[in-house]
Length: 366
Image 1 (cartoon, rainbow, N blue to C red):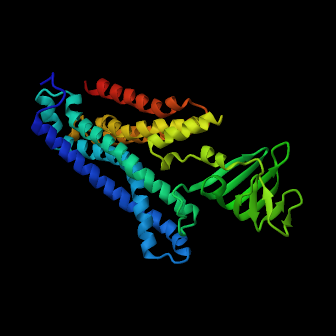
Image 2: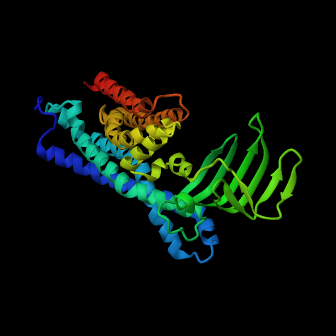
Image 3: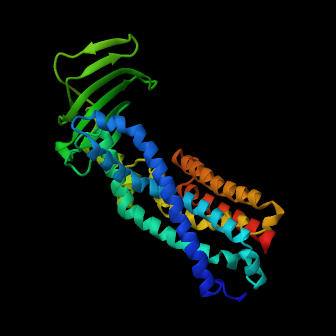
């Protein structure tokens, strides 16, 4: 038995089924609670749009739930690991398994199997469901929960460089000469890059060259004086519609294949892609975080329950798991700012905590 990584078929199915049921139960609890809180915070904005009602609230929930599932599934695996291992320990089942000759890794093997399957399901779910719901939800939010333009390639919160000036659009639809921007702001800056004038418009269309601002209103920063234009104006003459395509890539709303194409287009145009590359790698390392949770929570499985240290061990396992998520988010943020290479930002936390978990398990139980 020592040469087999998995224990008997009966034990593997017993522990694996127990673990899977607890993952689903914890995930449902987290998603339901968080969805209710999120819906309470957004319902006012949704219902403020003309014509919106209960149907739009349900639509928002259907678009938000996949995001919540994807984000909190690793947390569910961690909490399910703690609950499962504490239950086995309290019932002295871990002691029975070790007395039968199983090592600590063999006791955890069914959990690793379920966690690996969870990682695969998470990756497929992210690629097929989450990216679509995220893209649709961001487009709907950019339209302030009104009807989404029929253009499927709606881009939100687009920043474009106009020489030393900056052009911002809340939403961009269309392609080429038919590109249309809504809720547009143009920031004129001096040589020190300080903003000296702000021009806003509800809509802008391509003017070949520049962008035709409809009913623009201006504000002079230095004199704090409002500028009134008697007619429509053209601004941002150096901004081309092609920049919208290559400058705005939403990693959350694109599959790994689409994101690869966006990165290639942006890189060929000479722009920085480290942030997108880090998120590309994180699309692979993120789902694998579920595989780490049984290892990080393994301290809750061992030690005598009657020793009074079971709760402390559970807290230690939970702390290791949450520490991973903190370090992972921090490394990804550092990668976005250029502090870490994208590959290191996405994978370093995974391998670091893999070594930490193995060290703790081997030093304490093996």
